[in-house]
Amino acid sequence: MAGNSDPLTPRAKLAVTAGRAVAAASRAAGRGSGSVIGGRVALKLDPDLLSRLAQHLEVVLVSATNGKTTTTRLIAEALRAAGPVVSNALGANMPAGITSALADGSDAKFGVLEVDEKYLAAVARDTDPKCIALLNLSRDQLDRAGETRMLAENWREALTGSKAVIVANCDDPLVVWAASSSPHVVWVAAGQVWKDDAWSCPSCGGVMQRPGDDWFCNECGFRRPAPSWVLNGDHVLDPHGSAWPIHLQLPGRANKANAATSAAVAAVFGVPPQVALERMFQVQAVAGRYDVVKFQGRDLRLLLAKNPAGWLETFSLIDPPPAPVILSVNARSADGTDTSWLWDVDYTRLTGHPLFVLGDRKLDLAVRLEVANQQFQVCDSLEQAVQQAPPGRIEVIANYTAFQDLRRRVGN
Image (cartoon, rainbow, N blue to C red; front, side):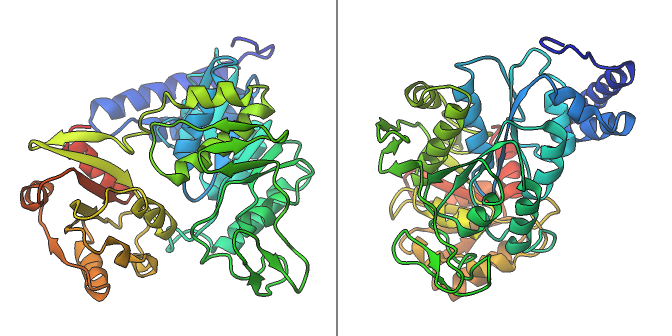
């Protein structure tokens, strides 16, 4: 391997070869990219493969409930200014998928890796990251994910005494609680729109005071730390007070926040903010998110929203009424089978939009919209929804597997 004085062992090489073969067979059978099954096979043959593949890389890990894939892509683009990058760009963010991605990175200098919240501790242990970016924590996959406070505690334990530089969102109390166990933290004021998972103090359980953008606990003194980097409208302020413009092709305030965090991460690796932000402009879409596609003669913009915080952010960037909106919700294994989170979403924000409802759990969503006093139609197919939608670009909002179904249907 380039830059690696300790080349892969014969066993590791066999594991990589076998993983690639299985992944190729999976792709040939039309069962997806094969990265996960290929990684699982490789790790069965060599359980230490992930650490072997990462040992020559300068690694940054990105973890959060929302924004992981986009931020990972932005950081990867920024770091390419300083050398070759390997990344799990398609979002396979558990150890098997990460292992598959790194197997193709023998000539890379940097590894930019999205990591599922539940696997952050394990992946950090195996990859010895130089930097870890923590964006947010909120409710997600209620049937199998730990309660957000438990995830924050797990992160806090994993980061205690970490050598990595932690780049963390100081506006999310759960993230601050997790990151503050580390001796090396760079705080970013990236904002927090969804606050319903952080009204009690993660330190003592007391009631948080949240005036404006500030937050603190009167009972134990836990409070928002002073940021080094600040998202300020269309600019990010660096630790020296210089303002750098954020020009993105990706829409919405959330992506400006992702870019601000990405600039702070890039600086850890010596890439100046101006260079990092200029490179981020090249990102037009991320694994299909934000793509505008043609389908049955209509323009459809594909938007991913997996949980209440994600839906709230997505509602803020869609075209105003009367733009038609298609909503699609599944509850398969990758989504989490519990759809009770639908009741946490404020669907009154869609008032004035013609709504069309799809997906395995379209009736669950229909009941929720009925209670929110929204006007909608339940449809059997994407074709039916598009045919019935009034003129204008159609906004399509879907959770994870519903989003993948729609991408396949429109040939994206």
